[in-house]
Length: 107
Image (cartoon, rainbow, N blue to C red; front, side, top):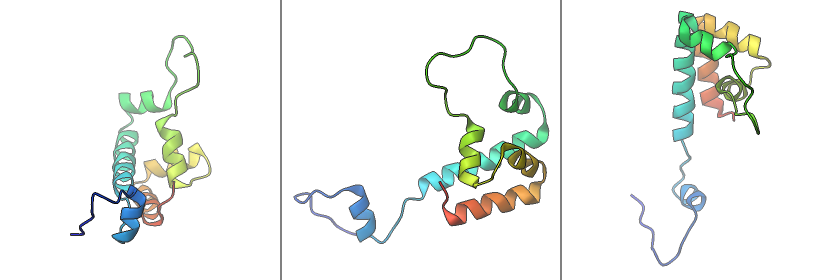
């Protein structure tokens, strides 16, 4: 384990560079989210309807919240939402897409 003196303050990025390491938690979280979402979408039950459908009611005020599907599409690097939805239906294609995105560290 590397030891660092408290007298010289360093940023997290500097420590990661000195330790020859990189951040991996966000990659793990995104991979697990994508795996779970693929599972939910293949079941085509209530969760699928909520994730893909529109809910009745008033429009929210202010800046729209980022949708889970938009963030996932950006991380995977896929062109459109329909491509992403099609890939979710095919388990092997979805696994390959997630694997490629986590290896290349997109987003």
